[in-house]
Length: 472
Ligand code: SAH
Ligand code: SF4
Ligand code: F3S
Image (tube, rainbow, N blue to C red; front, side, top):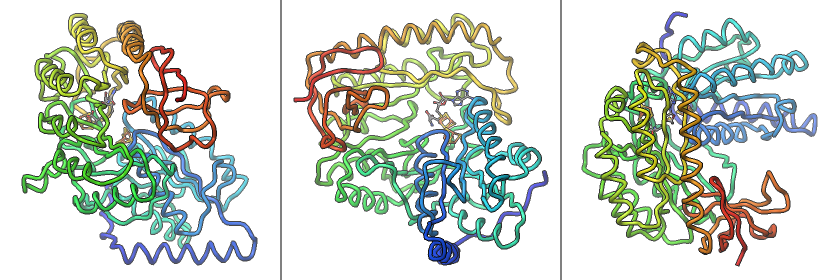
C-alpha cells in the first residue's frame, strides 16, 4: 500500500462538531425506535490501550451510543489492537474474522480497527485485502479522529485507511468513560524513545511526549474528589516524564505534587525503565503518604551481553543497585518484572544469568514472554534461538519463579494488609477478591458493601500467585 498524505490536524472545535453530528443522528434513532444504538469496544494489549479504550468509550457515549457488553448487540464495533507479540496479533485477526457474520446479519454495522497494529502498513494491508467488511482503520495517534472517520464513512460509504499523523501530539480533554468507579488510569505521557531492539512500541506509538503537569494534577484531583481509590499513572517509560520539556521538572517532582493531594487513595505508576529509575524517585516513594510501595521494573534479561544487544542501556549491576536501594528504603516493597526468554543469540550461559538474577532479587511476580520477532525491529534480523530451546528455558523460568513467588507470598501469612475490594471473585463466587497495596490478589469472605472500599485482611494462606485471608 502506498503511504497516504497525513490528514490536516483536527482541532477540538471540529472534533466536537463531528460528535454533535453523530449525536443528532443517534438521538433521532433513539426517539423513533426507543432503543439507543450500541457500541462495543474490544481491547487488546497493555494498560495504555485500556486507557485509550476508555476514551473511545467516552467518545461513543458523547456520540449518543450506549456501551454494550456483547459484539452481537452492537451497531458500532471498535477493536483496539496490540502489536507487541505475534500471538497478540494473530488472536486479534481471528476475532476480527469472527465479526464477518455479524456484518452479514446487520449490514448497517460499522466496524473500526484501531490501535498499535494499525500503525503498521502491512497490518493495514491485511485488513484491506483479507477483511473487506472492516469500515475504517487508524493507528493510536489518531484516536481523537474516531468521530470524524465515523462521520466520513457514513457519509461516503467508502472504506478509510487513516494515515499516520503528520505530527504526534498530546490531545487533551477527550471524553472518558471509565470502566471502574474506584480504579483509574491516568496517562502522563505517550510514546517511547528507547528503541529496545526487540520492541515495536516506538514505531507504532511515536516519540515521547508528556502531558502538562497541571492537566495531570487536575485530573487526579477530580478522580480523588469523585471517590477513586486506586490511581495508576501510565507511560511506556514514566521516568522520562517531562524530559521533552527541559525545565528540570521530572517524574519524581510530579509524584511529590500528586502525593500532596488530600484524600484516601493509593497512587501507582508504570512502567519504569531501569536506566532512568532514580534514587530521587525512590526517596519520594519511601516518604510518601499515598504512593504504593510497589515497583514494576522490567529487567528483560540477566545477561549483560544480552541487555546490550537489546539496547537497554543498563547492566545487571545497575539493576541490582536500584533494587538494593529500593529494598533499603522500603523493606515492604513489592517488586515485579518483565523477562524475555530466547532473545536472539541467548546462550545457555546467558539464560543462567537470568535465573541467577531471579534467585538474587526474589521478585514477587514476573511477566515472562517468549521472544517474538517484530517486523521492522533490529532483533528480527538477528540469528534466532530455536523454538524447542526457548520452550525448555521458559518452563524452567516459570518453575523457579513459582517457588520464589510462593516463598515471597508466604512471608505475608499472619500479616494484616489493606486490600481494595473488587467484589465477588470471578473464579470462585463464594469469595470476594481485591488487591493489596503491593497489587497482589487477595481472596476473603466479604459482602457487597465492601466493593470499591479499602478493607483489612489478615493473610492466612498463600500460593505463588495469590493470598487468602480473613476480613477484619
Ligand atoms: N515500556 C515497557 C514495556 C512495554 S511492552 C518497558 O519498557 O518495560 C511490555 C513487555 O513486553 C516488555 O517489557 C517486554 O518484556 C515484552 N516484549 C516487548 N517486545 C517483545 C517481543 N518482541 N517479544 C517478546 N516480548 C516482548
Ligand atoms: Fe519497548 Fe523498550 Fe520502549 Fe519499553 S522502553 S516500550 S520495551 S522500546
Ligand atoms: Fe501493545 Fe501497543 Fe501496548 S503494542 S503493549 S498496546 S503500546
